[in-house]
Length: 106
Image (cartoon, rainbow, N blue to C red; front, side, top):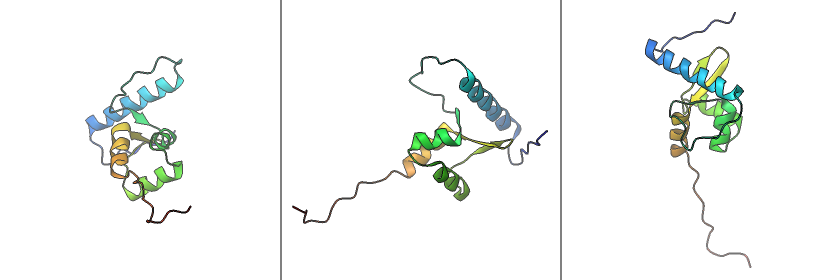
């Protein structure tokens, strides 16, 4: 049986994260239901779901995790990210549209 290491997480935070993981897993395996317009802020996303939400690759999410740009929660061998943290990262890393230099080609 794998060992769960909870170093650095206080007791209430652990159970909040655990509830969110259970909710996530139940939703992933439940029959399709109408999607609510607002998702709970503590909803946990998989790496792939976070990448899709941000419009980046899975490798980018892993890179941001390693650099400390995205806070994540590890349960067993899986990493989860809170939707609110992912959206906050999106605010800090929005791409800007570059304007062209003067003379356009014609």
